[in-house]
Length: 572
Image (cartoon, rainbow, N blue to C red; front, top):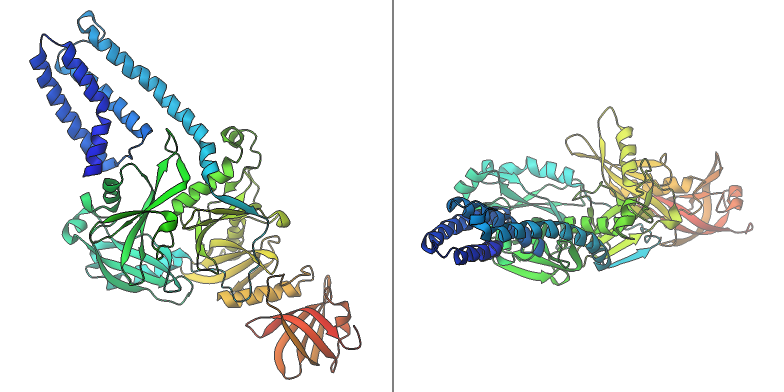
């Protein structure tokens, strides 16, 4: 209760000064006045204590100033009423200066905080650790570019809720992506359904874990009692537990659980102190509170110094705020309203607070968001951001080499229009640079949130779509389709791993296409189907059985290969 008591007392400071002034000025009826002040003080203290307990306002200058003005004004009215005084009269002239003073401070303070908040937008923008890059690194053939959508994972976990003891007490809590023992998984706690279930149960039973990369995986329930949770009441509520420990920090979003290597869950909450006399966040000084749900012990860390098992010490809400400040206030507040030079608007296609958590090849988590133009009816992407989930560093890929690509909203609409009779929809669109081609990777879900397909959509060509049942199958099919399309001169890009093969041509087929010819062939003692376009090697149309060749190709997992270069004995 330390934090709540401190906030309550700070909120009453102005009233205390008014009360003392009131007692000093009423010399003739001092005893009566003291009693009146005591009664009013007790009532205001209890009412304020309850409000602070319920609302938990952070101890910041704007919050405390507003609270003091409100309570001070109410206190003055109460003092007038209980002493039968009439304000602004000759008999109560001593109150005039107090009343006018409170009104004057309110008139000055509220607009001042608003103006300071506008100027602080530039400070928040400058506090973001950011860098800009032209293009993302190409995805190699061993990368699995996506994870299971949270809607699909939640649907499976909901169906498994019956394994929880006293299941009628609980609902499924917030899903959180995390890497546990090298596996990327969703973690979801069970939470109380209402106050009476909390009153009866006192503590929750544990959490669910389900793979975030395997569509066929089934959820596993892990029994781990938790007394302090998001859905608990009174002092067992996680938000109140953190507030009591650190009332001078602002909490961002809802606390989420992450589990350590031993399977023990911990609640994690991002905190920040505001800039100057405002409530605007300082993105360079973010903290994370880690709470033991059994003992309520709270430990505060810099986000980058949090225990290693915590992947998301930066909350999705803070990442979304970073995108907002980075995109809108690059040249200040006025420009965000009038000129809008270089302004970028974050799209709202993310799975958590308009962002989507993903993992890179090093196992680090980032929040993905694509940016579009503030101009209405424009559905092309200007680029996308990745926010590091531990450091908060923002990297903006500006897409300058790929102007004219569609945004995530357009990618979802393509999927939505593909299956109108089944009402299947696109979910969790992610933009990847696959073999030199910006590509949207989208989950296709049925109305119940069950996974149906993956969709790979060429971001610069809305008609170029490949569907598949697995990530690997769809990726290989997409690459093969890129190779067979004459407009794609480059099919693998610089990041692909090419293998050298030599041999004798055993079978060859040449197919005419609108913009060229497609050559497919087999080598002796090799069952791989090699594909090559005449745009890359015009002389390849003259291949015939028995020719000796040496080639470089990107080998796919489906028994095919995309040829990047070829030397034909006697023709080169």
